[in-house]
Amino acid sequence: MNRREPLRIAVIGTGRMGADHVRRIDRVVSGARVTAVVDIDAERAKAVAAGVDGCTAHTDPAAAMAAADVDAVLIASSGPAHEAALLTAFEHDLPVLCEKPLTPDAASALRVMEAEQALGHRRVQVGFMRRYDTEYARLKALLETGRLGRPLMLHNRHRNVASPPFFTSAMLITDSVAHEVDATRWLLGHEITAVTVLRPTPSAGAPEGLTDPQFVVLETDGGALSDVEIFVNCGFGYQVQAEVVCERGTARIGDGHALVTSTAGRWGGTITQDWTERFAQAYDDEIQTWVDTTRRGGITGPSTWDGYAAAAVCEAGVRALESGVRVEVDLVEKPALYR
Ligand code: ISE
Image (cartoon, rainbow, N blue to C red; front, side, top):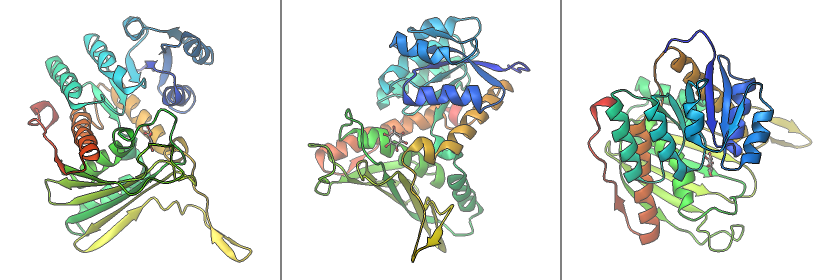
């Protein structure tokens, strides 16, 4: 594909992320427009489509992907619905941006990876948007210079104000820590080999029965350790911080020091309240990059392999959470398409 015309996108799933992506493609990103939206809730799909010129509403992803005015697909439905949508997109050989998780478990991620290999070319960019965040990108660039020496440890903090009602203890790993799993693999260039999950007494601020917070330790094949404090009911704000400790220095991001005021005997700043605010720039750049690359006929960003590796690590993480012991990660050999 080498399109002069705007890329015509079907957005599957019009919940929180899907609706935000529809707005982004319609108003922020250049070179693309939303021509179809899909939701199992017909009324919700219609309401979103009504706000976009020339956009049709569907309840069946396959019908939207078969439409003549669709060149690419953005999948933002719930994780369990991703596999079927991805396989249908492959039938039409459509470029895809798939929100994380690629799929909920390693077996289904493997099936998707096999189907993509059968196409003979990469079609999927996985929505690990932190790779497009300016601060994460600067940290990655610094590590790549080698100035600080070999990375030894990565300390991550990931805090949400409150978890949604459907959130389970396993979802702290599969839905939230999934981001640190990808960030660790990407920043360090290592694969994760084992996961341990430690559980302090849950916060009184967490819903009854939810194991929140958790402390997750990831071991890598490069001999580094990456730890993650995940706390999804911290109550005070949305914080994502990372500090890399290397042989000759450390580097840290996510302190949110963009604006610090000093007044009335105090100093301080504000804390963002959710990820759409904290990572707005990252989402905008992620989608713009996907659109630009797709229009040129290329593919970039986190691949199906990255989605599979994250799913396998998260699956091991859930077993570590449930068993209380260290669980090794079992990855298949990396296929040539992703090397
Ligand atoms: C949510 O699904 C996200 O992807 C957010 O980035 C993360 O902070 C949150 O914990 C997840 O539930």
